[in-house]
Image 1: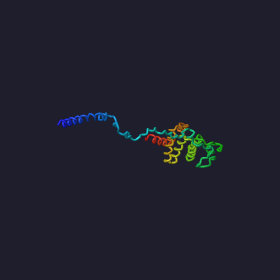
Image 2 (image 1 turned 60 degrees about the vertical axis):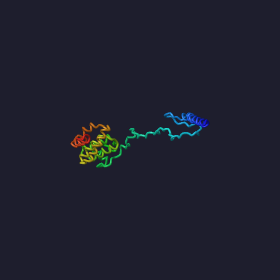
Image 3 (image 1 turned 120 degrees about the horizontal axis):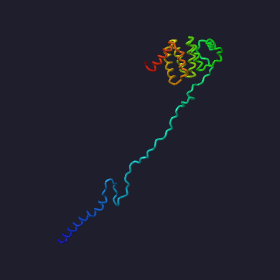
Image 4 (image 1 turned 90 degrees about the horizontal axis):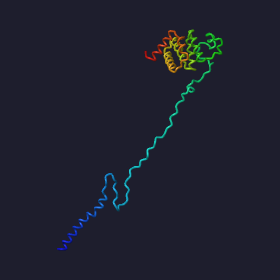
Length: 210
């Protein structure tokens, strides 16, 4: 009976001692908030899984700006024509026409933007509207002169070419906006008949709608 009581006492002591023996390992596994779990003593060294690698962001490649077209006056200048090229479409040979207009030697008259306007004006004053348009168009091949657009448009109205006159009015307005004003005030004073007033009405209507 004494042995049985001793065995019962020993078993109770061992059952109490087991939890105390397990407490260090349990305390070692307590994980603080935000901390990663650590392997317990004696466990194999296993690395935690890693996320996918991310490459550092690359700066965008620098691109060279596209070259801009050369807008220098040398590039925008029209190809120069010879001053002695005879215009096409005159009612008679150039030398004969110049003699009729009062030029003694037509062979030596250079056809520049200035002289083509003078010739166009003399043809206009003499009622040669078709020849005036030819001289004006020839001068416009050399220079975008507002005077030449003006006399060309007035002569087109004189000949009943109303659609062409409207287009010439647009070119005239563009030349004015581009400051191609070579003696335009004097030209307006010289070209002052009824058709010139009608051409001015077209220009004003296109610009203002009135």
